[in-house]
Length: 439
Picture 1: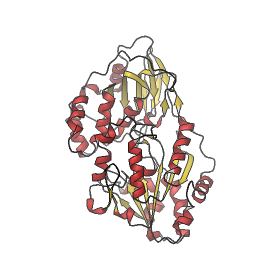
Picture 2: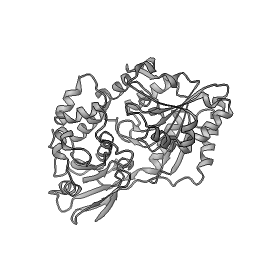
Picture 3: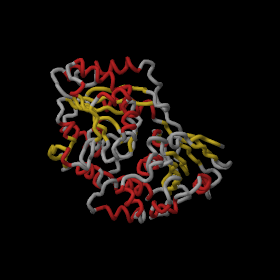
Picture 4: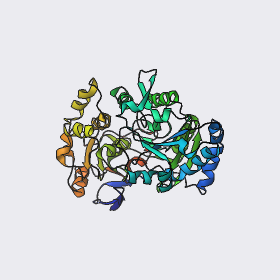
């Protein structure tokens, strides 16, 4: 059997031997909108839970718009023009608009990437700023949340009269779903804020996981931060497999985002009959598999599809290597799941430690394998013996010693697939391959 998986920009063919029972799990979505322009105009003029954008912009002189960076396939070149037109029609001039690339702690977008993110005309016309979480002087202190998180948000965003975010909604490994409030924090937050909201205090909360909004303390924290930062208006979309727009949600950052999440759940949830013994998944290809840091989202989302103790093989191109310098160091010195979790439990938070923390938490209950050809084993610490040089070797290891009736789930689009076993279906007993390595 051969199946094409998302991998980098071109994809990769995975060859599978005869034997196990294979089940391909693909992403579901609503149909693409027939008239995207009309849907955007309707959403902006008749938003959810607040006045129209034209009304909100009336009398304002400046506006700041937070947009996703290159690691997210948000179609800003489609969604920005109608939004900008309404700002200008309301009296906000071109030089009164600032577009901020919400990098969080990711690297700055290159000039070429800015053109890709925004489109050439917008990139050449407007003031565009890469947020830098490490430049503390560029942020405004807004006090603390009820849970004690210090709030520092980019001053260029805060100084504007109108605060807008532009993104898209998909499942997210710790926030439940992306979009909305995430474009304020961590998107435009200083590292002093980001470190706290990504600390063990939140990362080890059971509800801080994919597809979880209700009782997710991290979601609640970010809503509070965005509210304090005067998040006035959001425009998010949902996407199909081919990255076409399937839904448009604009308006109140709380109500419009909730409507988008509800729409995504109703149109994209794939219901499983049972959990698999093995999952072979991608990291969703470009741009999500640019680094090993990003590729971890493939394995955490796959954990919802496999039995406790089952195997997860994640494949990702990782053309830009491991990730930030801090993450490179953390991964190279990684000594095992339990050791790492204990190491960071009470220690000061280090940039990007949280992604490896999510990996380690998954590794405690699953057997993790990797095919990331641009990452040398010397960079993987204790994960080196779970990484394979060739894809056939990785596939063989994932399928090794399985019983004749083993179920193998194939997830070509990785974390873009939103699938769950229904609550009224009882998961099978743990798979025969226990997650014992790299501890």
